[in-house]
Picture (cartoon, rainbow, N blue to C red):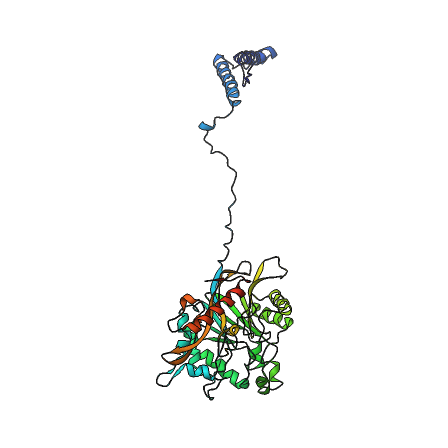
Length: 437
């Protein structure tokens, strides 16, 4: 059976309380008479008023025991105070730039002649023309293995400044001069070459004319990302050694030593570099794949803080991999490693591996909130160093190695060489992380 609660006073209870009150009032009214008191002022009206007051108090007591009706209350409902929420800080947006990395450029006198017209002058535009916009990116890097000294006689080593203008127009932004031949004209020749590169609107890096320059970090900003550029090698050509003193050789290049690289990268980071690119002049000239020692050294350089490693010196193209750096911060640090970029342009046609290379493409992403770098859209364009006839004149140029993009002036013999180079490139790239564009 359902049971109801009974709340308040019943009518019978009220009646009995009222009767008791009347008796008490009457008693106190007669008390003075009983005790002999002569000042008697109590009358029927007073009794009635007191009776009415007692009755009202009893009724009010009963009403007050009932639960309050919130719908008729004049008080606002009580609410739990809600603390003011402080908005979480907004994470800074990820920054990104597009990268294009190319192999080495090296001309000799015969290549220079093939790009010169008596009536027009230098035709370095023909050298890059067939690539179109392939080299255009936020940051495009290549290695130059020639000197550019306008005051010296042109030779197989020294090229005219027009070459640099053509490189800039093709899309190159930074030029690595860190290679074995970099001091073939001595420290003064290096200084002039670097000044010529800067005058053409590009950034040189990799060799140094003074100890102070060796200690100065090369940092540039591309699409809002601060990028540091470093280069390392362990020796110079015999000509370079003869052109420099023992004292100069202590600072003109940075030795390929892990402790040195750690120190340099830390200096770059302190100066605000967000992405660090390390170029390496290493390996044997005729090698076609990285050695175990190179792989181990590349991993150490990645652990030291490099984000991108670009190998030079071997004229052949090597695989491109993603290394995982161990930096004791619990974060994932991928490092893009190209063990050797080969030749973008060379006069040496003794071997097909010398003629085949790539343009490496990547979107480099920097996360300011974690200090980490990531890569997207990893790809490549295959390239081929061509030499042939145009209007009965010997020419040289950099072409896409994809047969479908071959210009009309490429004859059947050169098409066959191009196909072999393309096959070589795809075989090397099959073991890496890049996909053909």
